[in-house]
Length: 408
Image 1 (spheres, rainbow, N blue to C red):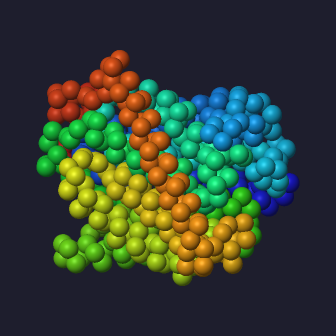
Image 2 (cartoon, rainbow, N blue to C red):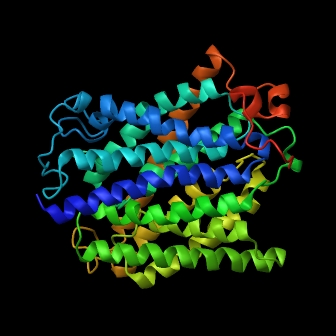
């Protein structure tokens, strides 16, 4: 075990943990003032529930080494055998329980992202039931496919350095399915962000935490990790430029929310590729990611008519897909010998593997999410009633208000 790597991963884990409260602020500022606390609770509760599930069974199902190609087994239930001693299957230089904690922050964050799709209209009790089932039946299998020893996408050779499939496509697709099932908000046309400075603070925390998210996925301080650091910073910056450029061409006004969304789009796009591509490629990935997500948030959503309230799919689903494809185009072993060469470096096979991984994730996540939501809805409605939606979920579901002196 290397002390330097252990300290590095401790810091990276804390940075990723910070992203979930960042999501609460980012999303909270974009909803109406009567729903800001409800929206924040959709990020806060996964920090409690998913963390406990992860320790009890989630980590074992995702990463235990004695499972099959689809899902892990129960060897590490309750963290049995997960100790300070490193596990060489994942990292020989950091404690095994440190690796477990790092991956736990990913599981928590993924669930928090989902809530952007159904904000302002889902019952809190239904949300609790959903995240319990989804964490075990969707997140754990997909994480095992991509990162677990013996996982079929890992064995196939598909690349996902820090969570393009596992975190972003899975959360974005789930948000889309729930948005469609729940239907549109009643007063959608009058909905607008109530506090963009709050969203700005949240986006800044998310960007800051993303360095732990991506760089920490190297699990060590080396040349690859430093390339990831550079790629993450430059892709976010390029994402802002890409988004605002298109926004200015279409609407003639660059907006603060657009700039923040562009940064998130660039970060999502570079996530699966960050440890496999050059900094020059990361500029292209971020720039195109910003433009692609602008298209998803403005044109695609309107064209298809779904109410992805805070653009979980528009940012994370579309950005994750582009990132996976971009990995198949720009990956090079000159950056990471453990990776592969993509199409632009002479090998088309990686691109096909990336497409297979994206399609498999899309199909599996959408189907299982649909059945989980439908089953919960049989027991109790998953959508709030019209009176609750009109008065706001903060007061009707949680008995409190975010603001008492000023009405927005």
